[in-house]
Image (tube, rainbow, N blue to C red; front, side):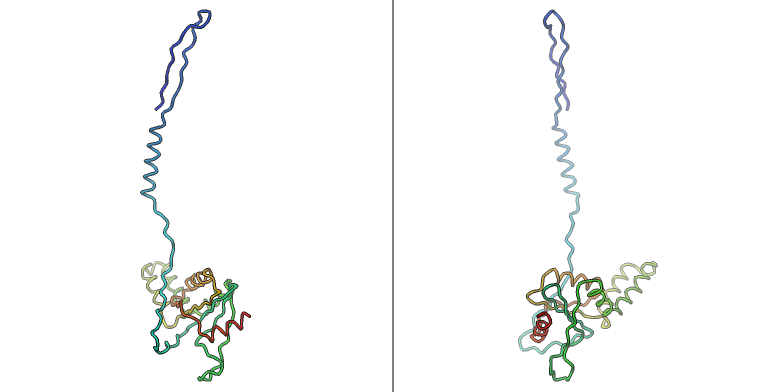
Length: 212
């Protein structure tokens, strides 16, 4: 509240009457109370930003003596290593002089650019991308509900015609490369992602021969 204090007038020298002096004092107590009330209101009603996360299931270690897992159909294995390098191969891994008489696996190299990893995943996962694009067209035309679109898109990425990406890392791989890899897989509609599987010794030897 503002208060005006008046001081009594008096006579100066020579019998002249002096004007009354007025002083103003502003009481800020109500303003402080109002500020605290507003602050409390905004704190209680504000919605805090939630960190964005991606659900990820890591495979459990198989028990000792268990048979090797069956080969992954339409699988692409990515080997991440130092200096943001990505090596990959499609299908099953074959060592030199394998019992099946297959030619040995040769690692190919790519990178995190739009003409590298993104283009590769779009080509490898073309069937799923084409099917999801058809659903997206129906969704934009309002002939397919949003909930149905999301459910059918998930079913497509889980189909056997869609690829499975296996991500393997060595001790020189950065967390940033792994996150970038997962982000790119999601952008390219690769729903089957396997992370946490250790490199086979033959894979590691072949990788070291490529980067050294």
